[in-house]
Image (cartoon, rainbow, N blue to C red):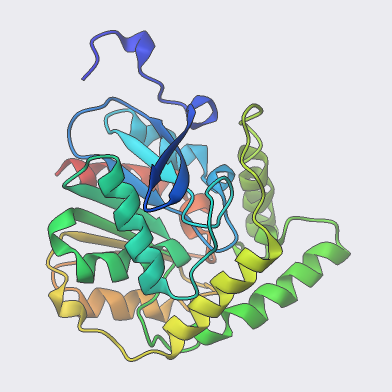
Length: 285
């Protein structure tokens, strides 16, 4: 750990943009927090780039952890084409982690990212120490294959109201939800320099295809996940039904489940004040 506090960046808005090349792909990533110890790798959601992480979640975790957020193949600043299966995305994530020289990591994942994390931990259990799965569901989870329909519907609603689709997709449309949505979208603008390239339409469509495949695939044996696992969601997730978080909790032995009231897919962002201490304590344990 660096002894010179000035040298440690703990603000995601100021995290340096870096790249690493492995297997013919150049991966874009940002890192912050003190180095040394087990790093926390952040796996991002559908259509998201490095600019989509909530600083109110990343910054407090980076206070005591080496945090790395990355763009998987074909997303944002990373080269190549997005794979059309979650399993192939997981293989790319492993390539990225190993390219940075890590033999063991903690994973913080949200939505699509948490599907990728599940596939990764099942194939490479030795690589993962702890797992945080938020706003997600298991392979073969009921109604996951309807994500595309919900997403396109909400993108249309957002276009008509000139707002960010995430305001519809991640939050309830009541007063509290609308307030939280606006605050979240504003926080994503805190980084003003070195912003990421937006996701391309084709990359986004391929991600949707991969999610549909995941939703229609055969359920996997989640009892094979023996890592400490924290699962979180809002109680009204329109994208990945909240009941699927309960399903994950039942099937992953010893896992912990937190469901936030009156919130949607972005429950952890709406309730970041409550969620962050839980995540920090879980990682430190």
